Amino acid sequence: MRRVVYAVLLVVGLFLVIAPLSIPVFTSNTPFSVLNTGWDGCSRFGKLLYGTADGKIVPVFSPFDSFGLSGKRGTLLIIGPDMGYSSAEIDEIREFLKNGGTLVLMDDFGTGNEILSGLGLSARFSSKPYRDVFYYKNENFPVLVRILDPALAENVSGVILNVPSVLQGVGGEIYTSKVAVVGSDFSQYPVMAEVDYGDGRIVLFSDPSVFINDMYGLNENFIRNFADYAFSGPVYIDEAHHSNFNLYHRGYITVRRSADSETIFYVFLFVALIALFVESGLAWLVAEKILALVSRVLPSEAGEPVEAVVRRLAERGYREDILLKMVREIETGRKLGGGK
Image 1 (cartoon, rainbow, N blue to C red):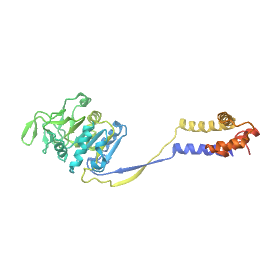
Image 2 (cartoon, one colour):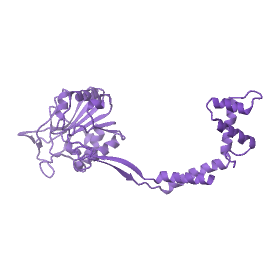
Image 3 (cartoon, helix red, strand yellow):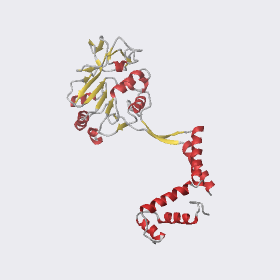
Image 4 (tube, helix red, strand yellow):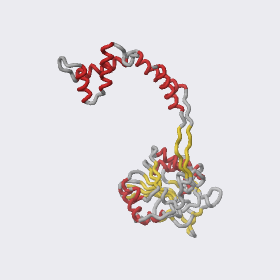
């Protein structure tokens, strides 16, 4: 009988090691969504943040006041928003920042200025794209080379933008060249800036397209530097303010797992140790020690029958059937569980 038990343990152990694992998957085709694996999504950036924030990534699908943002700690990422923010939501952002949170706001021509205005800041995203003499492929892809912060510039020769805006009314950490054009004005404009707010901070970046999957490979070193610079977990990602956000597919991926020879060895070793513990009589000795300890802690009165002691222990929460079995095994001298 015991051979069957050991065989079952072995089979169950190997099954748990090699059984396929099903994982639920949600995807979207919304631009700038971290759930969008297409060219205009940010799934690669989201995966990077997952590692940066130790896996503490929380997509936000509801208004911030419903979500309770003000009571959270960490980083709020708003990227490419095109829906408005209510006064209640801006109040939540304000309290989140005052309590030490970080807001990373990436926008160009969306609704990010509503947040800046609601927070009483002078900084704004320009409503017009800028052009520069330094570009990649064509003028829609200007290249930034003036990165003031060494942590952001490490292993980065330039940042390629994609129809970007610029920041106005604020100093910056990254700038365009001195001959950039916005409308008909030639100047040098900030593209990234950091602003202190309460006990928190706001990081502004005027081109969310830098972080889409299609641009990720061109800017990977910078994106990694930026993630280390701006984010700490947990990270809350605003998906609620993308006007056409949808989870158009829900499914499962199956992860096929295989066991190497070392893992299989440990499974066999575990089952062998269980068999050795039982067959050698160690299980019997352990049970005998436990019973002796119980008898010392709760000694019976002189002449009191063993059954009476067992009943008293049962009243204190011990299982009467197990105690009686142990007594019988001791009296007969058989190994625990060894009777036929």
